[in-house]
Image 1 (cartoon, rainbow, N blue to C red):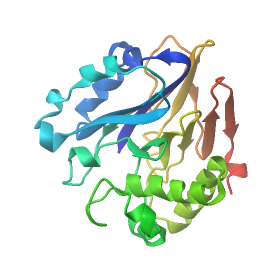
Image 2: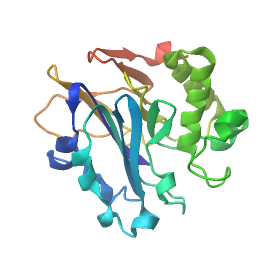
Image 3: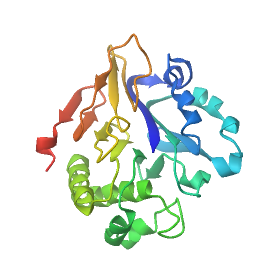
Length: 249
């Protein structure tokens, strides 16, 4: 169980206001989600990440959140991790990168079923662990999307196909994620339980940018709830497309 924060802007900018200074700043959730954190962004169209794990840092109070101020990009994705696993290393923290995509997930999925259908190339791309026991279900979920995307070349269709397969596997709690291919920002919300916890909201701030977060971070702005089983695509011009559950079958 984790918290997600992302933004896409017309111009290059940072995410520090919502991360550190908002009415309910994103970093404040580290009190309950302090097992690791990370930030992903694009620089000269290349994806970058910075991550820290609880084991290496010793205490979440030692996380270097000040690094957020240094990150400027049109697309930024941040993540706070909460897990029952003993593997609270930096390599298990999110976001993850594969080729030009950045991904962060909130929830759990049936990783053994996903692992079975990952081809050798994508199994060899796993960074969060050396075997099925130590790698994270979130990274496998991401690599499943990437495998499907690389087969047919349509990322939206790949996401929808994977969502349906993961639902068929069963054993999931939340499928919430934020993801970027370097141009667009994608987000999806679905949960089998604790549906209030597995929330997602978006905020369009005039013509400047769009913010997505697991929770509303400010009280004076018009956040819109993303309904369950809804896929969101935000394009570089900040056009927002939502697909309802009826079209994701």
